[in-house]
Image (cartoon, rainbow, N blue to C red):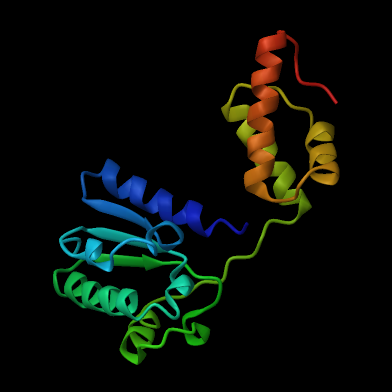
Length: 171
């Protein structure tokens, strides 16, 4: 709920808009697949790996990511990673991969506070062309899930209901 996946997807989207080969790879969806699917990706200008912490205990995936990391760096590719913890505390068994993941910059993202959640709702409502009063956003944050993804899903449902009923969104 801090926006790690969103940032990775935005980076991939921007790279693609500039005509660069880029890929978003969410390990939450990939671990049940064969790690050989990483082969051939080293030529991408940007590879964004989400939830790297999930690799812990999956030796074949750790080895495949290590090989890809080295090959992509050799070709000048850029790599982005997200995880629940920083690189120093990842429980990756392969020491060489752990050290590679510690290269470069590392940032800790903090979840939005309530004011940030309200601002997110108001901004997304404006982007959707939906007029939303700050009191409505505050009510949603207070009475609904605080998970930004769920709040935005609720906003989308409210927008659809508002359009269907041809009535403005009110508290």
